[in-house]
Image (cartoon, helix red, strand yellow):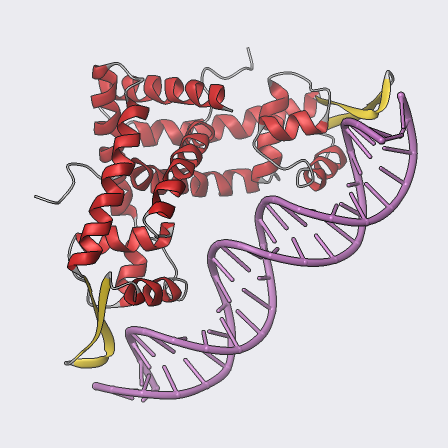
Length: 144
Length: 144
DNA sequence: TATTGTTATACTCTATAACTATA
DNA sequence: TATAGTTATAGAGTATAACAATA
């Protein structure tokens, strides 16, 4: 009896994440956003940030690779980027009203799709699934 | 009230998958396997396959990018790769006993780590989480 | 002519390292 | 000199396209 009782978790999760990400692409396209751009808007929606490096770290990105994203979001009028008067090396980052609107719109559409996706689960399992995801995600943050 | 009731599912899943994959790396290293190599062994453990293209598709890989992986696994003695006598364009792929042993060993170590990871969940949520993952993964296959 | 596997090429994404400006 | 941000370069990973063998 060499066959495993269950598949590896990573093997289960990878296609799910791939499908979820693929479902987001057309929605983000409609809103004129890239995946990194959307990630930035969601992060800034939790509150303004005091440096680009901190923002990059919060979304698991390299600080150099979000720069073109920030340039674009700023040109679109979705974020503000000002040198900190107290230390002009640092950029203060914040969402604009327009940025919050486009983020809310995209996120609503994305989560509507996710709700359909989750609706395949029985109600009890669905709640437990979300609870488990949040719990495991919390623990992950502590390791970092 | 613009703030969402929950984070996006993809944003929850991505770091979890990243952590799970990172935890596999040292285990696979100890076994002299790459992530693609391990994926191939797991796929072939479900049964032999009649072509490399079919194998690639079953693990969401490009048919060209598993070729170096197959070369290496064959050199390690973990798989057999024979032209099909009925159509010599096609390669018949199968696990060797040695390949099954190394796959079982790596998989046991990986799943032991996953069990620890899952142990942070209450027993009920844990069972529901696994049930939900399997269910969602099944549905995903149908779309393809 | 069509298909499997293979090789070669090009492209995308990401990280590393060098540079500018502030401190 | 040290740090935030930026730009330029290089590297890894992947896909696309051309090729060889077989049908």
